[in-house]
Image (cartoon, rainbow, N blue to C red; front, top):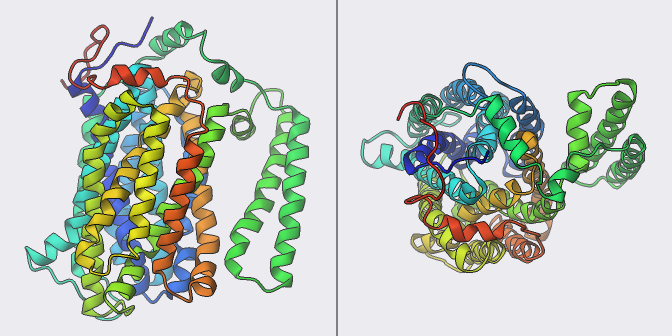
Amino acid sequence: MQKPALRTPQILNMCFGFFGIQVGFALQNANVSRIFQTLGADLNDIPILWIAAPLTGLLVQPIIGYMSDRTWGWLGRRRPYFFYGALATTFALFFMPNSPTLWVAAGMLWIMDAAINVTMEPFRAFVGDMLPERQRTTGFATQTFFIGFGGVTAAVLPFVLTEWFGVANTAPAGQIPPSVKYAFYFGGAMVLTSVMWTVLTTKEYSPEEVAAFEKALADQSPQAAAAEKKTPKTAWYRNGGTVLVVSGVLTVLVAQFSLEKELYILTIGGVFFGLLQIAAGLLAQRNQVDNPFSEIMGDLFTMPRTMKQLAVVQFFSWFAFFSMWIYMLPGVAASHYGTLDPTSEIYNRAGNWVGILMGAKFGIAALAAFIIPAFAARTSRKITHALCLTCGGLGLASVLIIRDPAFLWISMVGVGIAWASILSVPYAILSGALPLKKMGVYMGIFNFFIVIPQLTAASILGLLVTRLFDGAAIYALLAGGISLGLGAIATLMVDDKDDQYTTVEVNSLTAPAGPQPRPVAGE
């Protein structure tokens, strides 16, 4: 029994929820630094405050992935997480711009990011669940289109509210401008309605059907079969002990030489990870049956080779984008507008323009999402992704060269192309190397390689900007451009066993091959 190809309306319905998710995510990325500075945060403290976002994803996504692999209820397998995550995200978006103090805002970032992750993580596995291999690149590209569409909507909301509807864009010191508040309110409504559309219009396969698909794929790749192996108990203690000792020594050195406190994010994080490995080994040895904690940790060490190679690509890619999210506004405001005062009218004008630039990035990504599968069919997914990352690296680096902020949209063309590829091609490559019954947990573990570079950026970017770049935040974008270039090189070393499927996918949105699927609710 093979999965049937889905029709265009079905693919659109199952991916539409990502529109709302991205509205919330983009509002967070474009405005949280602005909210922090408005509430009194120092520029050098912003990376530490942002640490909530990657840490939350690190904890939440593998847990939600593991749980969603095992959830079967009246809403299905993944849709319960869409439903409840959307409710929580909407609440967080309504409350965030009303935070009375900096530390309340920092706490709300934890809550908002956790809610977004609960909603977002199962959507990645959803494509693997519902689509045959030949349609997965198209499925992830469709998600990327809605991500781009949602990003454009979120990025221009404050600007539209100010310029078209006269909503105030400034406020007294310590207060969030009304334009930002109303943008978050509209964003919350969009999250709820779009995710509920996917929940109500898409019916998941039953456990029996999923079991039949897995049986038909019993001859899956050696990589996927290797991912089913158990981690030897001695490996927990050996690996965990090594990480614990090395990280402990580095923590002592940071303290001894009075280095920047941000470095503790990496060193103490390493200590914690070493302890987690040892704890997983102890639990696995004590319990005859697998426990969720040890199983997730074990899956981390038995992940397929392709996933390990993609992890390197993801590290360089997400380090670059995290640097842009943190430093795009302060860098452009200082270098192109000549101010770092978040209460000034010119700074807020810079903030609105950066929002437009982020919107341009998302708009380009939405268009590129449908060009990427066609280009990959004529070259390969690896070459396509490497070229896209190169375009993004050149785009970020060009922010230093372009002096007139009106022309910074040119930089965003390259960045948008890279963003479209980052959100689709690695997942399309990865899904073909994973066992079907662990699609959720491995998609969650794959998020580690989004989070780890963000934690690294939060640890060292402040140090680089302060000591190496003499406080000029704009140079953090150059560091991001170089990182994308390294990611392009790493992409060429990835094994992509299913690359031949891209030749089938070019026209799959208009004329999918294969038998017609069973009816989908809501059509």
